[in-house]
Length: 303
Image (cartoon, rainbow, N blue to C red; front, side):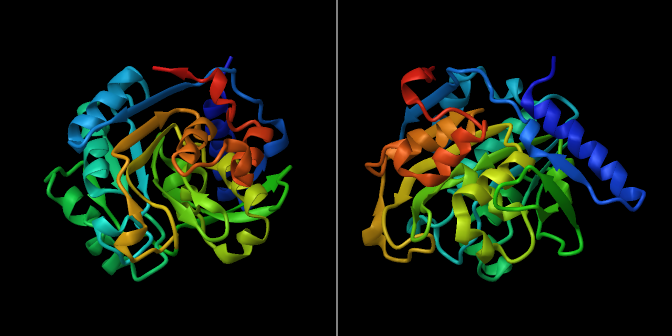
């Protein structure tokens, strides 16, 4: 028996091998099975971010459940905007740094941090504080890097609803583990941007096209890029004028971290911080319907 994560990884490995011979990779999304009911969900509140990350991960048994010694890990925060930490448009640098530290302590061979930004990447990486946070670790196993526009690969999505083909960033496809670290915030088109939408940062092409059918598009791309662990940063959230924001009047400070291996469950809980029910968010509904996770919080195992 193999779980959904292993199935996706094996399918992509075969697809990548096929690409080397000149054939276009094909991933059969229709054959993905829904995971078991009752996902584990850890939610903690606290002002001291390193301790908050420690205690929330510990509730799920620690990062060692998800990252094994010698594995190559991608930590994918939101670094999309030329905004400061206080403006809540990007993941908190202290959250990202703490997550990377946990991966290193678990024995990861490498930890790569990157995002396809909307504003100038150098300004985004600097203004967000994430570049300085990762570089301050001083580890040759952890690095923040700008994405290489030559390193994308087209994948055919057999069974995709909104997409039949799209390009994906190869380092994200090939990583042993992907840790998804979105900030929870308002979005003018999709209502919220959470874990599922954060994966838009590892795809190529004209991402604006996806907003025409954003719910099914995000379900399609999340069926290709599986998040081994989702850590939703709600230490401060942008409640209006997202995703870019800019005004501190739009920022609230719940001081909460939400962690789960189930991306739909994590997004569902995060939605409640904005006064929404999971069924109010089309992306969450599509993810649950497509077998990417559970939106029924009454069945979640709060740990």
